[in-house]
Structure formats: C-alpha cells, structure tokens
Length: 121
Image 1 (cartoon, rainbow, N blue to C red):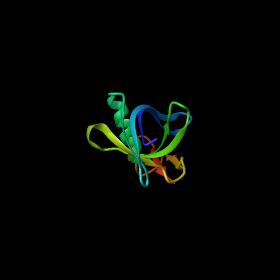
Image 2: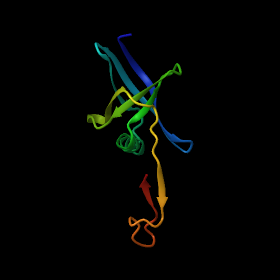
Image 3: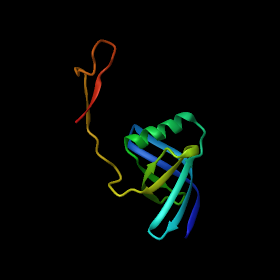
C-alpha cells in the first residue's frame, strides 16, 4: 500500500468520563522513511474544532482508529490552513500520566466565587 485515503476515528482519552472521538478524513502516503499523513475533521462543529486544538496543546497523543478495528498511536499537529492537521507516528507511550489535585486554598483563588485551582503535581 503506497497510499490510503479514507475516513478514520481520531480518539483522545483521559479517563472514563473525559474523551474526545471525532471522525476525520485522512490521507496517508508511504515515504522512504515511513509515512506522512494529513487529515481534517469531517464535522464543521466549531466546538469540535476548538476541542481538537485545545487537546493538541494539552497532549497531542491520539489514537487513529481504522474501520477494520486496527489502531495506531499518532501525534497530531494542528494549526495548518483550512483546519488541516499533520499526523505522525507517536514515539512515546500511548497515554501520558498527568497528576493534578484541586487546592481550594491556593493563592490562585484570591476571593469568594473564583473557584478552586488545579495544581500540577
């Protein structure tokens, strides 16, 4: 296979209540060094596009799922023109551990009504 062009699912998972699943159109082409891929969201939903950009900034490790059930961990680099993004094979672990705690007495909460702060550990 020198080229694949079709629809896939792009998945980002943090825990059982925090997940992002989107249908994308993707083009994957074989190269001398492996493969190159580019995709875009099928949906025109602004919230979905903003969610993807947010997650790419937070942790760009996603799973690309094909119709046959096979998956591959990918890194998504958004910000290309027209809502397009580049996909590369993710070199690290599929999931990254992030530990945070809620500190209701943090200096980031200067007064009533400002809510607790999330503090990286």
